[in-house]
Length: 222
Image 1 (cartoon, rainbow, N blue to C red):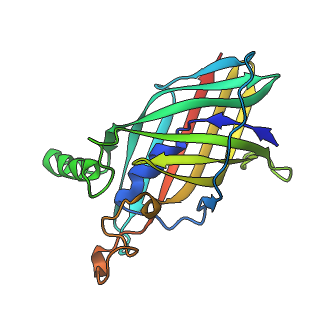
Image 2: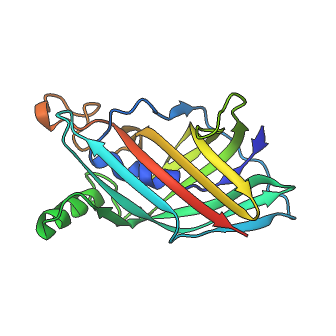
């Protein structure tokens, strides 16, 4: 098992999708709080290409209707030590939430503003989201095209931290790191309450799933 410390792109996308919810069977596992190891001084730094990398969010109400969009990566670096991924840090800019499925400018702005409000992510108070990856474990039974690593770490949203684990496809070679993750995430444990059956009763068709789906394509190079 490789020790990793890395603030990930996964944090944010997951967050943003709280506006709706999803029915995917790829839910991230909530685990006990993890402690990250030290980063060696002799690491190589692979900087995340924020233009080539993508974070997409999508979610649904209980009725099946939903929304989708993207969110910006502010900055990031992944550490490589002795040929292995060893850690890093990444920050998502929560002020850069984008709604892609609504073409009407007024309706688009309304949903964006709602996602930024205290009903969801309180962006004015918490403009960034962070994920610290602590372990990076190969999946021995992985086949080509399927997740080959189990990633575990500490996700902080709205100054609330929980640990989680999910599968990812990670390729590393010739100075390039490509990573892809597709998983569901429970937004309610980060006090994202709007339309959540965990906090409110009798929502009917206004119930929004707590599970949200995110897809991340990450590119870094050194």
